[in-house]
Image (cartoon, rainbow over the protein chains, first blue to last red):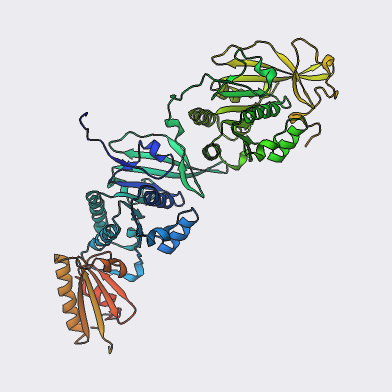
Length: 498
Length: 98
């Protein structure tokens, strides 16, 4: 046995992603200060810490509220799926509402907060609590006048909590120049977390940052977090390393003609593929092939569509004989459509992450990733893409991104390509060209990591039967398909504008 | 002042502040409430559950149980005027009539 070092013990936070940033959770038996402005999610995070402690680690908890009554708390927590009443009935949770009404209290002479200590101590001991929340102790300052007494008593309270050995969340309202209005951060030096709620370009984003964590390494970035019907979750992707395992298995793109261009007859499992092209170059059709290829292997596909609704996508693909319906029925394919402008970039990433975790797909398609990019600044975009790829690679998911590019160099949107192309493993470029008054598309492989590939530029047409890759140097006009609709289909294979 | 006064003093053991508070309220009561009062001392160290039910957080706390409505005064009660006003024994005197 190695000698045991004096390592700081930690306790799981119960907040998805936060344990990863904090390297294992909150400091066991110590106070943690969570500060943020009104509505930044402090109370919710605190409730989740207690409730997850109860349900997942069998650690009873005490919630001492200075702001909301037990009834209000239970109501609010209920909307996030936490059933406080049951836990209270099972003697796993104790809520104590400390009501402070300035008009009802007269102060004269010296006093201390021993009553609060006794109250808290009794609550902790009555259920054997391991976790405590004080939300928010600064309310004392608005209820009482003698700040000198309050300060020394709060300092004593934190020390007492440490001796008691309970892991405590103390919430504090953000001050103008300090982290909390009353400077609580001076008293809690173990772990300080800042929550932030910002609106940038009319899109609201919540962020979390660990300001201080004594005796522990931690992520230093601002991490986006989400509050939804399942509570709080944080996305810690930037803390991940390039340690994912790689697969040597080669799988089909779903389009045999395209597979042939790769030396291995397909692409490596768990890699990222990018399809770029201007409008109407059949990116979505290629993505649908990709999806079907996965479905035929009985592998689940999660298709994020940012331009079309599921029905629209299914109908358009059906028009070129790509039938997605059976796979939706057999639950191998799930199409999720949403507007890019619905959320900020980080929120999109978070929701992608959540869908991926819930659905556990083998293949993820994002069509098109360029519409996400329009809502973020360049720095944000590349950070987000790196995070996204990390999630996908970590889960060994085959990924396909489509990206819209412009053909004219003048307004060529190169930032998209620069940001993505260095991260992807395979890059297929699609182009439009005109040939004898007929539009023909062509494709070529720009890069393919770890695998040889054809350097040919292949012409292809979109027909009623799908994509038809032509032999090199064969003029498209000569290879008219049965329906005679060569190359006149609009984007997504529908020959009518939707 | 016809009604009976019921005063509860919440303490946590025999601390100097609590002893002082008790002495003070005894003195004020004797002077202003004649025979019509009772003072009960509640030691939260012995009955900690009362801290929550009676909404006590500061020590010492004096609670006027009767007459209604309930009133609370925290501290060692060293300021007599404040205590008498707080308990509504004496109305706020604007002019120095006495």
